[in-house]
Image 1 (tube, rainbow, N blue to C red):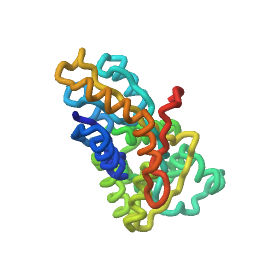
Image 2 (tube, helix red, strand yellow):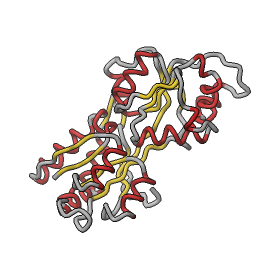
Image 3 (cartoon, rainbow, N blue to C red):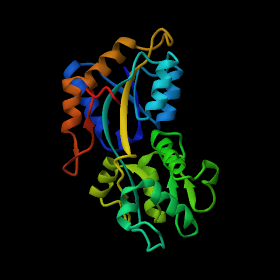
Image 4 (tube, helix red, strand yellow):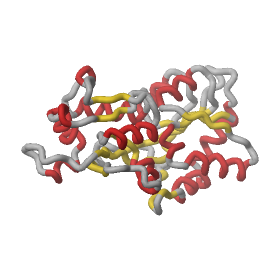
Length: 259
């Protein structure tokens, strides 16, 4: 049975835990393919996977509406954070406290001072990249303006993008669990968390079994079984109990029908 999931779930270590827990409880081996959400959705639409665990709700709902997936259920969430060097003393009508809690205000200031900063983007069509672009748009910065020497795209996963941000002393968007993993390993350099914005930066994950009607090669029964395990008591407990640096990496929320 083939699961397609994201680099964020791999980089935090959660995928290994879920894979082993499911195999030990059911006896069913799980093969996992890891990529950004955009690439995973494409693999699913090609019929190359049996179940998806991704984090871009709008694209996930479209995937199901197109008939590629049977259904989508929420599984868990964590938070995105903006990381980078401590913010310089820019002239701004907003206080440091305001900027540290409002991603759109912070990004608008970064753009205004773009000759002095570097922003490192995944640039890979992932769920994280999609959220980053949405935040820039909410800050009034069109995607066409995200170019030039100040804006670097790695085309890579979360961990590699963070490594580049550390090397360049730049800013980046990442999920907090991966950031905590880096911090535990002493890999964050001079960077720190500069923005936490719960109103705009919730990072929601959903699970989708692939439809055998649309994709005859799909192991639909296996995909459904794994998805139901994830949203059931055993899978939710495995997610709830998994920690990075003593802190929860993700928060189970399969019972939240609003997401």
